[in-house]
Image (cartoon, rainbow, N blue to C red; front, side, top):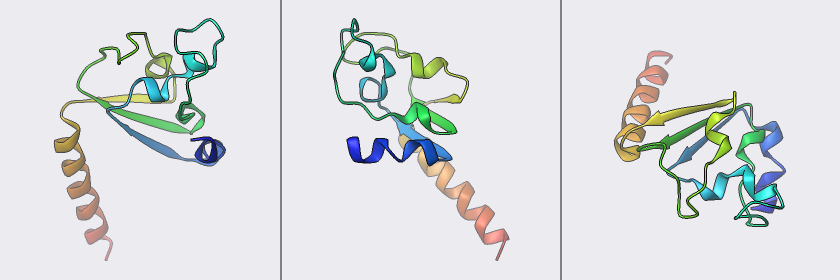
Length: 98
């Protein structure tokens, strides 16, 4: 995780699929229940899209402030189906440009 975290400052879009605690910036707060847990610093990217079924908390059962940041958009639903739809839409867009 440490290797990729350096790249997020230069990343345009991060697509987070079904993750919660592993992308929780609260891990950087010393008084957090997950303090010190290694996480992906996706919040440093220009845009973050999080795919989840709901706003439910993860295994640690704590709120994830990432979901409320200005550069984060939530995409609710079945991630597998949503990925398939996104892939098809991107394929259509790129096929039109040929």
